[in-house]
Image (cartoon, rainbow over all chains, first blue to last red; front, top):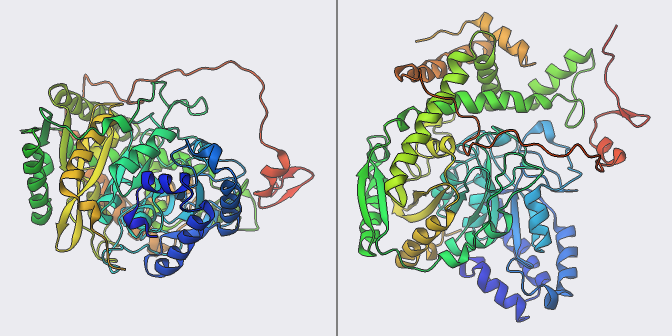
Length: 483
Length: 96
């Protein structure tokens, strides 16, 4: 059985009807990982023994569990989400030996639904990067072309789903880290509204921007996962106490009369011709389904990357202060306390992490706070207002997820600023807090292109509705990489 | 182009508890200068009467009852400590 030809719903039916045992499904997953992960390198840690044990226990509970849609479904988890008793490194050498004693809230919820966690997925170290090349271990490869990057930072999550290693994965998105790799790998990736999903147990990068979300092959699969992880958590004071609607019922297939806005700033010169073509063709498809598409403007969007790098780096410099070799992680140095701090951090962190800590420390240091951090927070308000203004008159905003398709490994590694511009179309949405999904919308030179849909806060339902209608009309999800 | 000097890099590195080689210091000064210059384009925008955003959904002052609740097990927590002794995390001496 191949996950390429299954959905969460079809797997659920097979489990429920006892056509397949959870233990067989789990074994099958590890076989697939053994077959393809040498070339994809999506996983950092596998948890085969415990997963098989859990799967065999679930075999005995199929009758009781059959109402749970994720019962027995195998999953891969990004390595910055805490999993009790399973190594969680954030792809950093500094946390090479870190084994959490508790689960993140999302893991608690998914475990209550009886998923089977098969392992932890590669990423850019501490979620800082757009190519997976900043992993402290190895670079994940794009399943569509293994000499290319899978995107980042949730590159392992996107590649594992695209390669058919798991039906779903969790990622995290601070500036595009779910959507951009979803776009590069041809899968569906959702960044929920800020506050929709608990961040408790997600190793913090930039607390005011981070959100956990699902990566899946289809929109329906995505809705199944969001349904279980969404909701208020008293352990995360930034999570918002808003009712969780039924996401599955949004997939009605009808988008007649839907008003879609296309910001002209999202189709400007930085966007590759091949990407633009696919987006324009997607617009025509949506129009043929009864939606109307009009050009709008987000005048402050072009300032988003600059504001983001000040805010995210500043928050990171504070959040990553806890990694000092004292309470957890790898301790280096044998002199005084300062020696331990400096050696543990300097030897444990990679270059990009250090670069952002340095930038953030600089932006927050005496005399610069108002000029940089506070200024960026004010620009953030202007960007939010842009989105509010457009979404007052339209149901969704549409554009490319990333300006290009997957680039070659090594191509942008030495130029941080060019690398940052990969996220020029996703970053504004982290700053504004709106929900946003990337959906496969065809290919350019054989590489997947992603279409980004952005909605009003807490209206993930509308994103799913449009994405699902488009996906069912075009069937791009049926295309498979040759591995 | 905003220049970031080697001395500034050294000062910030010290605040961030990081050390760099002379070569790395030069590279960081260059990259930080470029990124700061890029970030300074924000000054093109007039934000005089704009309120800064902290929580995008406007959530603020989330309080809870100050009740005692179970915490993590001490033995479990110490498993991740690089060094521990008598139920506590061991560190180099803080005071001379």
